[in-house]
Length: 532
Image (cartoon, rainbow, N blue to C red; front, side, top):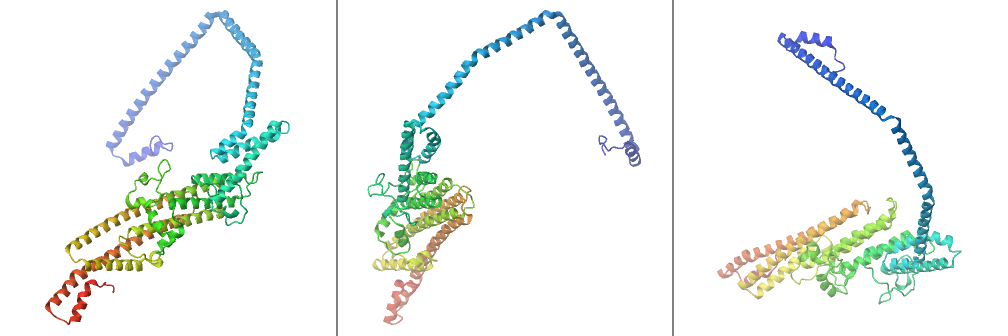
């Protein structure tokens, strides 16, 4: 044990040291202990001298205080006492004189607050109209709710307050009906006076309608949820739109789906997109082909479509990635506008179906663009099972068609300039596929960002659903890559047939071997597909 340890035992330590140490070590230990003892004695003496000096200084200070007090005498203490009493009397008199003024000021402040509140009540109708014009519907409902208690308590005795209460009730009632009509129209359920798929009767108001009799389209997704959240706040009040929480959720998501549909492609319906992706021309197939070149892109700071806002160029600029932003914005605002228990499985399932349905539309649309841009020739569109299935049959058929096309051109113009054209065309195809690869990279990164956002606690979607979106994008990427690999393989096999077997056939023909029929069959090798 160390010397400073509480369990140190001097006799045991000494006996152990004598028994196990040499004479030289014992002499060194003795000399070191003697030096430590002298050092401790010197330190102790220094501390004693310092404390004694401080004690003497303190004694002198106390003695000087007593001398000064005695010198001042009783007259100084009496003057100090009388001064303190005068100060106390002056403070009491000032407190007594200012008491009435202080109470008057407090009363005026109370009256001022009441007047401000009364002024707010008198201006409440104009305030509500202003908030409604600005689209702040929930704030309008909150302002009316905060003033309802005062109006209900004092309106019976004042005619002006009763008129204000009636006017505010009329404004809230009109707002409730208008918001319900908007949400019905935006969700596609206002046509024909029906409430979409829920079987409720719609409204027949005409104010606030567009040129075709329906409500004006929403300016943003936030406006949709502002309307839905306001209707939910009005549920259970005198201005109830007769929509419960579940119905408001369904209408809001349906309206967001219609809004995103326009963002995906304003001139193409989802049915036309599906028919084009499957190779079956729809009713608007021509407009679809032309509209792909002007797809809405990610928005800039002003909210307008701007392909350069995110630095995208080429084929990547044609992908409507702002559609993914709209899905994430809708999902986030859904959780903010309809807060509730995280274990609400019905709301989570409703939101999950919304995300899955709209992402399927998006991926079909993107597949249509990329497949079209990966086909440099006007070859027939593949069948539905060839594009949405494994893709191998579609790749072989499309490659075979391209082979026939190239061989046909080769038979028409057998010159060296055509070979150079084919090489230039192949270089263009490689550059085009490079653009497709960059577009797929941007697409995969955007989908991963969407999946990360959907998995946040504020949204509350299952991680498995978010990962499914990434898996669909990866499958699309793999399909296009396999398509390109098989096309290149068939092109290489065509080159082998032309350069190897073709030269061999020509040598046989020149040597004169074989019958005339065999010679004709051998000359047709260059025009025959290897797959046939």
